[in-house]
Length: 182
Image (cartoon, rainbow, N blue to C red; front, side, top):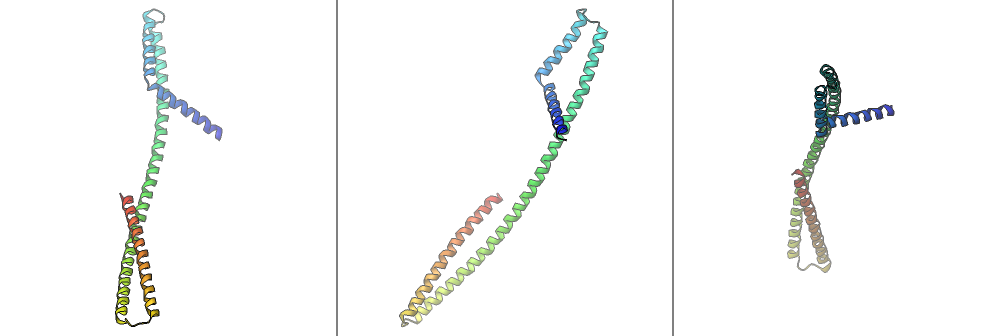
């Protein structure tokens, strides 16, 4: 089976080479010289005109038959390559559609995360206000309570920083999504 495939490939290469050569300037020159020589032979009385026409017609007919075969082989091969390219294009289109769907899903997720962060920020602000009110109401509170409040504020500030970092990451993701959409 491999030998047959190799033989077929060799024949296809030969056919492609011949087809290329026939469509080249050297081929035009060789054919022109051949036809001029063919018509000069009877003029120089080296061959009879009828014999020359018979041989010339036979040679040209055989050449036309083989050229038609070689050209059809090239056309068939080109058609196969075009079909392969069309299949590749269809696969790429499907991949692009999948990527677009993924981008839309990521955008929705980012919007949801942004909403959650806004809610968390509001809760943090409410907690800070409550802490401030507690501090104002309980000026006479012992040191342990004040220490707890300081720790709570510290935690809130820490949470704020983490939320800010999350917002930055979401912003970066949103920019990347926008770039992918373009």
